[in-house]
Picture: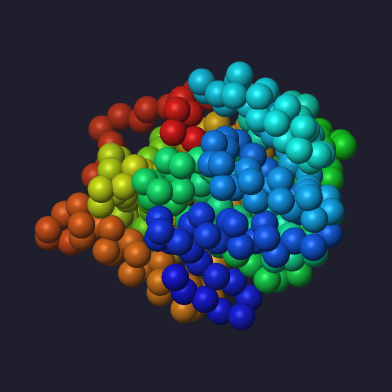
Length: 302
């Protein structure tokens, strides 16, 4: 774990559940959260305990997730029964795939993981806990908009420490990649978007080092989390993958990381995970022979 005054990274599986529970337990008046999948009873118990101590718990649920439609219906009923306010997302985007929480007016948590036992214990995933009031305010406003006016677009004044998809995802990720001057590091099991692949090819041909982890297990962990790390300057972690559905049609959220200490932590994390997969170090990206596009049904791991 690495921390600054403003933000804390949680990278190790053993620390993830506690970070989520700590944020839920810190809420005194209000707690919002986005749920794509959740089957962890300790987290559900913590939400029930929050309601019991008179915290207003509000959850937005995706309308569908592969092999989870019935469980999502049951989860909504369960949250209703405990006294939480449940919003079943009704916008035109295909899925509400973002993973975030805000306790009161902050802190906020942005994650790549679902609140499932598999993601909390066995996957390569990322959490950022932010104490930036602008991040918390932006997510609170986004939650309100997506619950009550889901096709109204993004709320005004969203912090640039947040990337919200689909409206911002493609332009901001492409801009980050194009701005690389030395190295691009990616952890993502779905680097499949044609425009992204073409840009990565051009950057590699110009002498920029491109390294990609995630096509298979990452140092023994299930590849699930998404990270883009450019030079030693900027990173994005969250639910946004470099695939067409994620960049174009889903509600997604990623956190932008600029703190030098946290950037260094992410570089070390990448190197440790990469070296665990390759005894000779992290390999240069092998350019795919052909581009493979995904459709929106290919979300078994999400």
